Image (cartoon, rainbow, N blue to C red):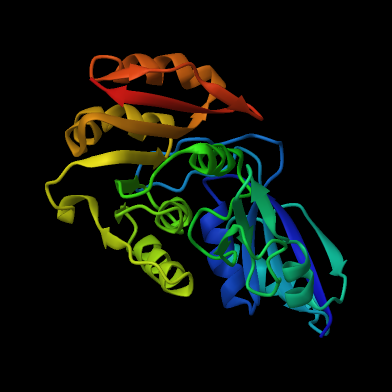
Length: 290
């Protein structure tokens, strides 16, 4: 099937309404895209901020009457005018195959691999995490996930109790379980992340207990992994410290290098913090519970 896309210039104030109208006009999909390379690192919880210059991209069947779409938009947006736009043909591809071809097995350290289900693990004797890209964060491609996986590759987690706080897809929790952890708990604010963690754990033949933060049992662990963001990490110091047994190790990531000192200072009253390790402007900070 052939497709075309309308690309509209928009703003945070108008993008949502334009998206709704385009859907009513029959768009098969509507997406937002940054038009000025403006990063958004840490949105407030419960918000979905957009870029100052936002492209609204609407996908339509190539057989659609483009003039009719603009006429419909003109009427539905009135008294506002239709924003500047351009129309582009979308290359006809096997999009499922294209998507799959972008993901290959990845190694982390000496023994950890992340493998999509459609690939045979390159090293059958390695610790292979079978994980497909999905809706929950965490496939190993982001520097923060890689930093944590590389640390786990070198760590001794055998027979330890591990908490993955902000578990996303469960990738770190699964790695810890496969590396011999006695008990692994995943915590996340997003129920969909907990579902993804359970599904991925089942695929990898490991047991992970998952909880929303308020449902997490009162307990302590030997290792706590928290790959979140700097702001939430700073607000969670007391909670995470309470979950760590004396001398437990904490591994923090999701932190930009310019935020490393501030985050580390927040944890120093409770943890002996090591120097940050940097990868592509992101850092990992490891500490030990005092």
